[in-house]
Image (tube, rainbow, N blue to C red; front, top):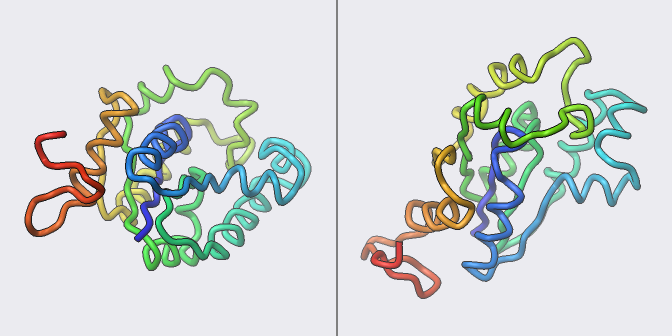
Length: 179
């Protein structure tokens, strides 16, 4: 079983993902890093050179090629534009939406111009937020409101809600009272 984290840039996918992977002894995979390693460019350099549609296509190919087990997968925020990629992720994992408000994202992100956002030049971050939210909700097996959670608390919430068995015992040595 894998766990895939989806959500907007700044929602905490990478930071929560690392904490979660450590807590449950899973591998951590960040698809943005895989893309950068594959292309030898930052996400922003890819967008600047080839456009946001090219970045989305590379993201789809990268995600679709994942063949992993016992991994926490942190995706790029635009992965939800690819039905092919999302259907693959849903086949190989439980998809968890790290939900945040627009106001929280504005507090967390300092510079939108260097994040490598897969968006049209005339599209604002708020436009992007409004456009993507229905996709995140559509594909999520589980949504976690992360506005007021620390990274550790978000990871513990995911463990409590996504990894419990019918006996109400959390896998990986945790018990319900630990959360």
